[in-house]
View 1 (cartoon, one colour):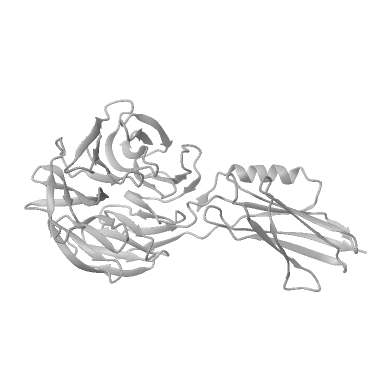
View 2 (view 1 turned 90 degrees about the vertical axis):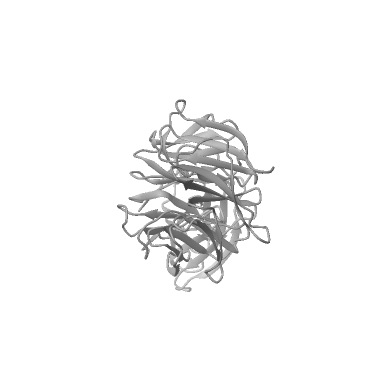
Length: 445
């Protein structure tokens, strides 16, 4: 089930209601959501490979990586990946790196053959948990003994070797890591499971880690028990999911000061940012919601996804598919949910025709394509006509819409009496959903 909150629908309804026409049709289309139970016993991380249209889901208890296609169908299960935890793809998506939390190593997997091609030890007694790419290196958060730390692996080297890097602070646990597409040298580290929560921002351009800023969130805002966080696509903000408060807080990357929030409730536990800046938020007891870049309210889309897991959201690079992982208790089989068109705007397409029109006289059919964000120049709508002479339909034309109003007009002179049904179809684009609508007029003598 999906709940839409779109001002475009209300605007279209108001427009249609103001027209003195009887034959009115309006429509929009949406792809179906799917959910697939995965052959794994636990969940820790999810990443999406847009080059090969693959989804990778780690299973630390089972020591495996489940690989699915974009429909959620299982392609393969990569086994013997001990304690598989954090995941990250290389920039060209040729390699998947896996933090092996119980093997003290990072595995390298070929994304074409789906086989492990190398394994890099992270140090004696270390347990790598999280991964991120920054500054041309692979960074990992790890635990060793009763504390945590950050290490790096120069994967571009001919002989990659892990290095444990001083971070300028004490970590109780392995810090979670995130990087910014807008600043390839920035690395954000956060400590999960403590109160108050804390974040540190580092520059990785020079040798080691150069701390830019650090903050413990005691107040303004007060944040505790961090679950997930992500850097926005413009590199300006960090969106945080934590048990408290019951909203996804937004802080500035520059100084970690408060910059608003995305409304939520009951234990926010996941956040993901698409390449175009669309933000997805999720909570254990709330909807999965998406927001347009720079917007914090209202939600762009809402999905009922019960039992969302921590870190359980990931976007496809095409920005239109959102993947979510659910499970009702620790150790239960995770379920992968494919939420199509999550990054696309709803589109309303309407047709207006009179109830009747005389045979042999001009008949004008008007239509409008609308959404809350404008359509690109050159957008067209295809119109077909179904009547007694063409019971399976015949093309009327491919009509450009007005760039200012979204309107288009057809004028015909029907030669036969009877009902004529006009069907308008918009095929959609990278930012707008497809839509189809119909309207019928009776031709009289």
